[in-house]
Length: 293
Ligand code: R5P
Image (cartoon, rainbow, N blue to C red):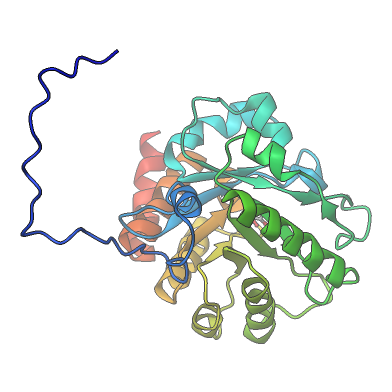
């Protein structure tokens, strides 16, 4: 039992100071509950308000794609430079060190492989298991315009309801089908639908014309996927253009882990995202790190 004999009388109430009321820095997230905001703070840097998510969830429909054959060998050394890891629960439990204490965004939809109709996804993780894994958010694919559009949106709204119950953010991932135009008009439609139906934040693709209108018309944070591997200078330029035009960061996979020098590349991406380093300078930074490795 605590010794209560010598407790000094309280007297310093700082009556001259109003209680602080911190403004939560993420776009459209100020009305969320504390637990939800705390989880988001494990994804987005409180300092820059942005994130470098390292996306390695491709295996859930592509199998062991190039660069992800041995995640323990190729990806674990990159974790020190990521703000967040986006992966499946299989990879999390089998090869990700439990000492990784930044945010994990868990892939929570799946079903078809690349051999089938991709939009035919179902929810693939219960919220109970996501919480057991202590994740910062769950991610669900939304196929606006796809064959199974309504079902994929229903997958998202079911996860949003479960996430709201337990304080877990939901990342709505706008998936682009081969037959759909990847232009600003489509991205505005897909991202806005995700946000309107409850996604805490949204992942989309960068478009070279009008991306600022995509970011402006989405009331919650947007991150961009990297997409197919391109030369490092181009990927850094795309990341710069995206954050400059309103993205809150990147969810980048192949342009990091398929790079000639993944450790150098992720560090250069960080410079762009968190410090607004211009792309030419970031590419030189990448080259110098690569030469020294
Ligand atoms: C795709 O559906 C996966 O969810 C990836 O996480 C996403 O595409 C980002 O990876 P990448 O930068 O390779 O496109």
